[in-house]
Image (cartoon, rainbow, N blue to C red):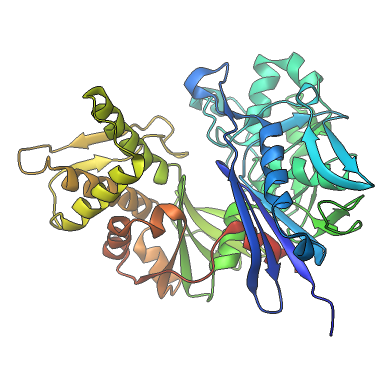
Length: 459
């Protein structure tokens, strides 16, 4: 009987780390673990900054892998990694150490003194005036606040001494790959590189000359390979995974979640978790007459056409926390799960039409950075809680529809929308809104998470 050969998939997400062991023969998940990172830390930019503690993320990775069955891990023959895009972490030599026991790495630890925090995709320190002052990228993709190159250019202007402390930069998932393979210099995928801005996907190279023209420290930039390529291997056995196991370049969590979900070229994938994205796969970059969608590198030289909204499950979660806080101020603490349960029940009972109009731009949008949330047409007929919740859910899908209209899906011959992400799968009020705005069936497949997609990508 032949030896089993599994793939370890990892997703270094915005709020949690997820890992799974994938069997490419049966296409089933053999084992999985996840852990909230609780990594957010205060920023010196106040609410405009968004930082995470990288050693806490490393610790969550160790926690997940160490809790997978050893007899399963010894059959792992490849490792695929993906994670939250756009963000940047800086480091220098000695940014991690391996804790070994009997010649086996039992865990990795990040060394805070030798690295910066992770400046995430949610960071909004780069104001429109600052972004307008930057040189135009040689790319079909724009550069927004929260993108790696924009954050580094902001530091170059406001904190140049900080940049001089470090030798390397990458996304947090690039850092994890460098740590696992003990890489001297980081290597990233075209998916992560494109998410930083100032990267030409057709030439597969950074805009080095443009960045040098403004004294950007280009030596910090990671080397770029195609998504799915291997960049190194485990130097020692790790929690039972054999020494020498090849590790793929870190990829984008969006691309990997879509790879795990997509079943047909006639599917669109809607992911609603922290934020929200609607995506379809196309063969080339083309003008779709729609400035609010982007072409992101996918796999095998194809592109994802994506409407990527900053407002998704985070808006609904904020509404839930607000209600909890109000009740607490009246002296009635209510568990979050109860609030969700009641809101969904009331939202499902609410009548179809409401005159209330909500703009859900609580976090702005990349194409509308100064937009704010707003409510119009409040009257005595629409202030019931169920109606308000339903109006918020409707507004989130309407916002996505404004970014990627159903006509664009129709032109791409899309037959259905495949749902993904806990923000959508647990919320039938949102699901009803999707079918209403897009006039397409919404279905949930067994596909799903980005960790599984990362495993499939390195097959």
